[in-house]
Length: 381
Image 1: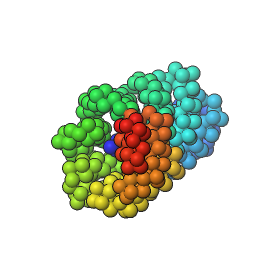
Image 2 (image 1 turned 45 degrees about the horizontal axis):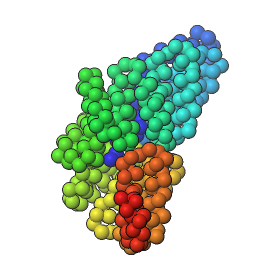
Image 3 (image 1 turned 45 degrees about the vertical axis):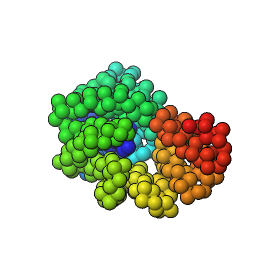
Image 4 (image 1 turned 30 degrees about the vertical axis):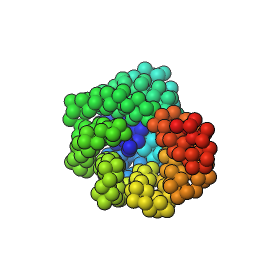
């Protein structure tokens, strides 16, 4: 299952151009003309980068400009403006998978927005902080902050509902996840946001795939792909291709699945999304596994694990290690498999991913049975 990164990689949460100009003008009266122009240029240049086609280099440049702007804002002691820039930085670093920096700026924005009574900014920061905690593997804490992010406009409400759906799905509460994804879809349709409509369909498609409701999964994932193509969002298209590929792997159509995952990989490489690239490599590994090409499968899972280790993404680490262990079991390398599957279980318990825990117990049970550890096999199953 692949949903939007928890969360978000779009411009929906960022300041609009009008907001950016307004935020800059709010402190211009306290600055000299040349300083006013410098600050305004920094903020507007960063905003331009964030509304272009998604690519990590744009986010890196935007982060640099925003950090420069933050230093200038701090000279004015304008805490509202400082909160706005910190909130923007929290989202940018979340999009760059730099979860520690995202948390740092998110908490600063939360503190300042509470102090200045800016509920909208507080909601925005809560969403970023929740996303960072979830990606670091602290799903319960992520859920706590996402629940606090309900204040704000309709786009903020969509983000909150969508994030709750993603987090609850990893916690194994599929029915609640479906409810939140459906609510997010209603909000997205009300405001006519095609990207958000597509992402909500993608969330539903992922849950229906996870719960073996394959016709519904295909329906929603195809709707996701249509919307993503309409708005020309490559990352959203990549997620849709990936989720469709997962369904076709399960249905045994490996040729179609492989083609879909190759498209997923290409799009993530074009946008320089490392976690997405790793996920696509893992998905191709699943196709190789199902075709019996186990060494190729392991190679792909190791590529995912390498990226997950760099990003410190425990959910991706658990998935990759578990798939390596499963492949080793199929090769008869049961001791190696046992070691990796125990690591998978430990990580899954740490992050509270119930689905991953269930997979780990099942794989471990089979491995212990092959090793003649029948008591342990019974216990794991």
